[in-house]
Amino acid sequence: MRGVVAAGHPLTAKAGADVLRAGGNAVDAAVAAVLASCVTEPLLTGLGASGYMLISPPGQEPVLLDFSAEAPGRGIDVASRAPLIPFVVNFGDADQTFHVGASSCAVYGVPAGVEAAAKTFGSTPLHELVRPAVRLAREGVRVNKQQAYVFSLIGSIVGRHPVEGDLLHEHELAETLARLGNDGAEPFYTGDIGHAIADEVLEHGGMISRADLEAYRVVPRTPMKVTYRGRDVYTNPPPSAGGELLAHALELLPERPGPTALAKAMVAATVNRLGSTTHISVLDAQGMACTVTCTNGEGSGVAVRGTGVHVNNMMGEEDLSPAGFFTHLPGDRLPSMMAPTIVTRDGQPELVLGSAGSSRIFGAILQVIVNVIDHGMRVQDAVDAPRLHAQGDLVFVEPGVDVTGLGAVQRFRAANMFFGGCQAVERVWSTGELIGGGDHRRGGVAVTA
Image (cartoon, rainbow, N blue to C red):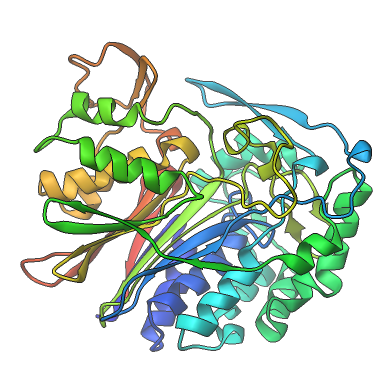
């Protein structure tokens, strides 16, 4: 066995697993999977998205690569800014309003992030890692049930309504991905692709300037660390909020916590958004762990001509602008709930995980950690177990959660992507076996290489 990849789409996970089989390490696999997800999960992520990658090299301290969204506006007259456009999403059991349009676009980080990860921690050239994504974009990807559901929720933002079984080709995106593999991230920030993106956003009343793109950098950070049940838990540090909330919740939990204790710990977070995120976790046979979360928000609706790039709507996310929309200065890193996490035991990765789901991210991760560490579940059972999300005085629950003592409850009729999409890999401590857990809520699978 060379390792395990857990991701939000079978073809995303396969792209990473194929890289492991070819001799690549966990970071190589994660980069290939991230690039493939731009094609297989086109509304959840993309080259116009942003994210964080947490890497634990064998024998070294973990490091967090921050390639998150940055507030735009250098040299822009804000008086010309277009208004945000409200967009309502109906989950069946809950409605939520988001904000899109060109003025919702923030400076993206995915091209810079994958290049930095591959160059610093990978062992395979970027032009090889991008090949699976290019092939998928050219040959087409069948829309599966989960992605069809995502299109039904937010496809109107980009004017696309494919249904399950449709074959989606992304020829322009294929060429843009190939450019990334051959030329690196430079064209996306100081070259023709970045110029095309900035010009299109500005043309429609947004604020991303060429100066904003030229100034963008990936930021290495020291992960936040908290001790839990004799393990070290490494997660996303500030300015991200998700890791802090996870760390705080872990510190509040009693032994073998049940639903009531979990709900009380979660009340630390009270914001509530869908978050079109996707997550990938990898653990290889050499002990390198890599966990990466990327997000496009709900997408802005700005699809840049000739590139296949759909730009994020992070400036239109209320929970990322607690002081109000457009209060961040140009160049500010936006806060985030994304929290790629690694749990180590005696210095070795035991659990590698992260989740989609915006404000539900830290709660999904929390519950999977508790299920594995406190309740002794194997990782797939831990991911599959019914979840809850506490927000203020209200607790949202999936079927199967014991609601005794929870107070006001909003019941979902079935497991739902509202509760996140946690993709996880576990090293079974007693045997050393590597196993994965893919979250069915967002079409996730785990593939062994």
